[in-house]
Image (cartoon, rainbow, N blue to C red; front, side, top):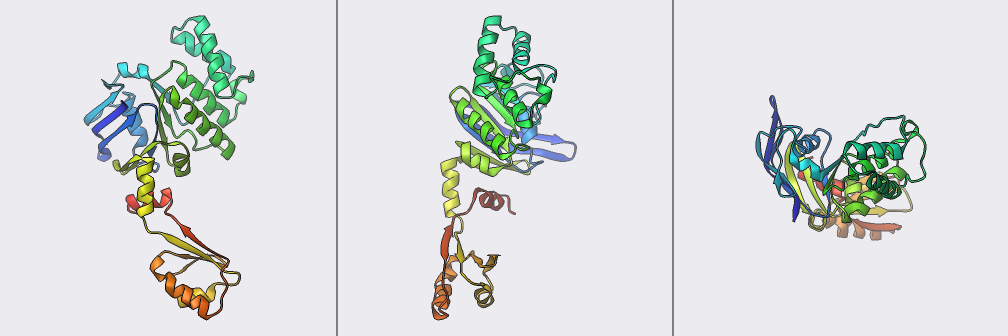
Length: 298
């Protein structure tokens, strides 16, 4: 079952066309990477999914129900983590989650049990300090606990790792993978390494359009079909090789990148003829970043 569907969705702000015929679906219990540069239209799409904006065309559904602008009934299925979550800074994590449960009208026993469960999940079960003393990563983890509090069927995360250090990013990504059994995750980001680590499916958004969409297996296959590069490392200065083969690109004092594998036989013949030594000859597949730049025409 698809937990989220967008079909031919369009949105315009004045003369700017923010989204153009956007179509994709997010299967249940997957981590779905929604990838694009800043300004590509990701946040606009998420606001449409949440019913915060009216779309100019197309349809959106969550859990099989249509999304409507305003107080949409589909938001009862959705948990949302903005890129910069805000809290009442004078509260501790248990106090804040209790407040969220009381606002939602949950029974006291359920609030207590759910708070303990989620604070343990996000690694804040021992934190009694006020939120004002929290790091950015700790606030993001608390934000996930808040977004999951009502057991949503869809968790939307808007650039959750963009300002975190490597440790904080890994902790957050591990949490998102761990909650996949409970919910479906729409993970908006421009950090392509994060997508490779945790996502099951992905959609690339560029200039308001979906330019590539599918499973990570499909994307990896497309990467393999891209041009293969070779890196050569020599023990001595590689300028002699570069001067004889202008298509080579130095990547370091003794390292050279060969983007046209067809030139390799001639280069190896030259190396053998000049009695040069090779420390390393390594095949490099196109990275996800290379693929993204290719499909957006950069």
